[in-house]
Length: 366
Image (cartoon, rainbow, N blue to C red; front, side, top):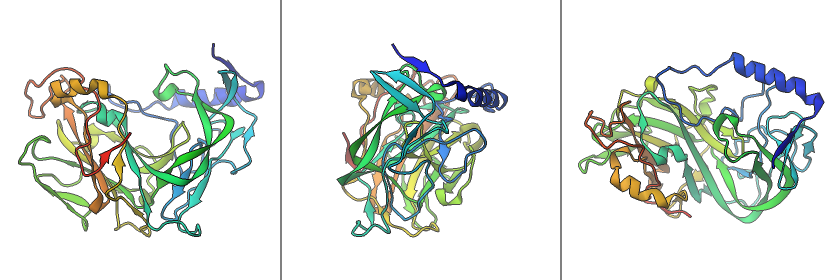
């Protein structure tokens, strides 16, 4: 039985936050379908406003290019005086509370003596929603990418717990019991990260589809249109229209973008979303993919048959191009009626789903 305890001294700030949230609803079309957006994500470089505080770092991070972002709290000096919930015999102190602060380990790879240069990314994790199914044109889709590095020397991480596993999205509540453990992995933050979205001029499964990456322009050429969206994290654009690095409610550094397809897509069709470590950025380059970098696969193999039966509505397949230090995914936007193929054919109705195999140069993850 999970019970939530609240300190009386925190009741007023909580009510103020709830009032603020009710007064500032997410502006979307009545006809738009929305993926699971995490409103608890915060831009690392953006200071907090008023009573709204950011998430604490719970999972270690490597600042691979020497760009170090501000974090809440002080490493080695946690503070647990705020809201908490009780589960499994522990009190779990929640994120987004100004009286709860903690900080996992982090390292600046540029200034750390003896650290490898460049930092080689071990694995790449794309958001589940892009891999699971096609999305209807007009939807607001969350685009997330996480870079991981396998560590030879573990780094400190905080044990995290969700209050109610049946709740997801905006209502998720995560906290820590303060227990530190040695993590064999860390996320990697590179200040050279860039996101590019382009529409394919042929269907994604067309065997004649030909595209070539142009490292000077930082975009694909060939059977593909000009970028509909392109932005690097160094541009520091705040808000839903920008591309940034964030700490999610679980306390992990991720790259995120809210893709409002009705604004930045031409209509139903196939789109290539590219995450690239761009040597043209203003940040000194010190991060690489190599032949050993892999795509992290989710534990959803039991749904692979669904993808094979309904390929028109399947999610994207993540591919690595280590030579150009990029990873991309071809995703499909369908008609609102559920038609699979972009040209308006009947397609196969349904939600698709499942986890595609890694079709790129990288190997499969665990």
